Structures are given as structure tokens and as C-alpha cells.
Length: 285
Image (cartoon, rainbow, N blue to C red; front, side):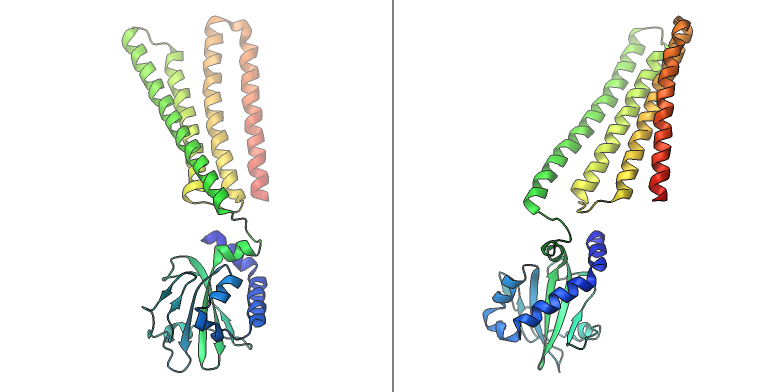
């Protein structure tokens, strides 16, 4: 909803001009009522609801006309509260702010037109309207397929991270029960596995949030930066623990190979410096 509103507000003047000119080219709208406004629905694929209110009494004089049905329940309802909020322009057209329709439960805007003694209300679905004007890319069959893929990949990563954590704990417990001595490496290995499990789970959670449960149709650099930063920090922690183990092992068993530990620590330092530069540049931007 927030994403659609941002795109709509950015292009509001162009969208209102497009709708206004299109309605002007159609002519009087009340003549289409005899066919339940079917011609208007064909012209505007984003149109989802049409109804008429009497200008004097401010009572709805028609049924609710949808694309594929007609609902008479809303007829004779008082619509004065809606009309009082409208600001008509010189051409007798008013545009509402984006809102969630109580009739269709979708994000929409309402275009209101005065014609003779009638006021005609047209509800346009925002996402479809923005798609028709090429302001967003919204290919529903494709997004359903990608959503299924992300669901499969996301939950598979969660299952894998859970397996890594459980197996590391199982391996540590079995080693502690079967052997009397517990080496330093034995303690650090589960920690590394747990850290990697957290990194994989966090990545899976972000993918499911952004692509499945709260689908985004535009690129959000802040979300992407946060995801990359969290994932890299977790990897750096895991590599740092591994480097600490290498230092201890070399210092105890083979001091001559300490240069290898230096290479590993230097590599981690370069990743950390690169991450710091990346965070600085993205915040500056």
C-alpha cells in the first residue's frame, strides 16, 4: 500500500490528467447506466466500481455497478459525508486521496463527476491503474510463479539452517559424552555452525518478508542494503571465530605457519573495510 501511494503521489498530476482527458473524450457518463456501465469498464481496466448519487438529496440513486455484477444493497444510502469532503475543480471533477475501499477491500482512488442533477463516483484500483500507465511492473502470473519459487527457496533455507544448528549441537553433545577431553576446537566448531545457521536463517527470513509476505514491486535500496549488511556481518563473525581457532592451533602445534593465520585475518580485515566503505557510501547517498 505504501509503495503504491508513493508512486501515485509522485505521478499524481499525470495520472489525474490522463483520467480527466479520457473521461472528457467519452462524453456524458450517465447514458451508460442502462448497460451497467459495461462500456466504461472496457475502456478502463482499472475501474472496479461505479455508482450514482443524487445531487440534491445526496442519496445514492443507483446500485453499485461492478465489472461482473450489480449490487443493489447500497442503493438509497446517504452519501453526504463523501460529498462534503470533495473539492471539485472548474470542470466539475474531483479526485480523492488513495484509500482502502470498504466495498472491494482494495487500494483505490475515487473520481467524482457532476453531470446535471447527478454525481457519478468512479473507483479506480491503484495497482492496476499504475500498471496500465507503465509506472510499475505488475505481471501477476509471473509474480505468482516467482512467489512460489521464493517460498520453496526460503523455507528450504530455514530447514537447512535448522538442520545445521541441530546437527552441530548433536555433534557437540555426542563428542562430550563419548570422550573425556574437550578440545578448544570442539567448542568453537558448534559456535561457527550456529553463526552460519543464523546467517542462513536471516537471509531466508528477509527473502520471505520482501518477496512473499510483503511483496515489493519496486526496488528499495534501504532494504537491500540492510540485508547485505546483516548477512556480511554474520559471515565476518563466523570467519573471525575460524581465524581465532587457526591462530590457537598454529600457536600450539606449528608456530612456523603463523603467516597463514595472518593471511586469513588480513582477508577478514579487507572484507570489514569494504563493508564499512559500502555502508558509508550508501548512507551518504
